[in-house]
Length: 285
Image: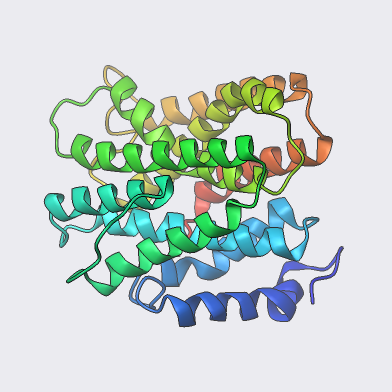
């Protein structure tokens, strides 16, 4: 049982482990120990605990599923063993799941099928939200899938500009998808959603740049925000300074948005966490 004002380790033992085991048993391939997602599970729980510890169990369970899906899908697109054609096929299936269309999973790998089934499970749950919140979630889910596929193409190109990269990768980092999932269980008006959207994009940009600091440090990806910076003698320092500037801009923008303070705090804490976390660590470490 989760208790307020309880430390993470105790909360993890008393609550999160059971939920993680449920996901691991239902989706054993994408959460296997040989997968990035399997190695990231405890850090995913820590992230959720940090920014959403005051939320109820139903919210925590949904955020955990969405976060596992995000990391597992990123792992899928990053794999050099999966053809570009198969990734495009996966994209088409995901779009059909989100839109409620038909698709065929015959002869697909277990990894492919588990990702699709997790999309189905989350989609089924968020359908219960108000129609405009569900529409918002679908839109952000489609943007996530589109960005992940486009990023997969971008990393194969030469001479990618910083602006080209950041425009796509800010959506592919997936934090806006997580927030959209969170909103499906909150009392947020359609007007509030539209007003907060620009602020969310700034927060997502901070998350992407911070993520790329970790990627650069670990030499994980050939292309990241640091590698595409041109005409700068110290690209890492440039990105770190940009993160600071964007975080000030984000905090100012968020403070002006008229929305419940509880929701503001969840958004702010998630961005604060990612900036600090990626400076020294990564989710699969």
